[in-house]
Amino acid sequence: MATVDCQLVYLTVYSDGVGYIYRSTDAGASWTQLTDRNGLTSPDLQDLAVSPAYETDRQVYAFAVNGLNMSTDGGQSWQRSGLDGRSGDHLLAARPNVLLAW
Image (cartoon, rainbow, N blue to C red; front, side):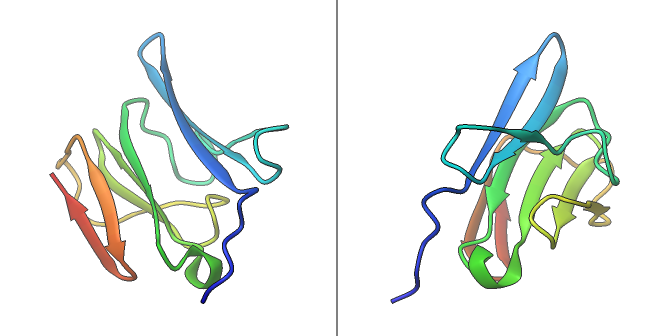
């Protein structure tokens, strides 16, 4: 059975018309903002999903008005997926390399 890091938490916050993503590696004692840096610039974040194989692939997905954004380094940097102009309200990382959006 795989080991799960119970200290790792991702959080989305929507305030005053702007969406933010934060990550904690110490169960919420401190937080790092991952939005507006290294490629993730959309102010309207709609959902966030973390890969079920995060321990090995470090993939995080953010759905926003500008489309799907993906990180392969735990949120340190982001790339657009090529689904520009598409948006959805929900994301689910069902299996490694399988992402459902609706």
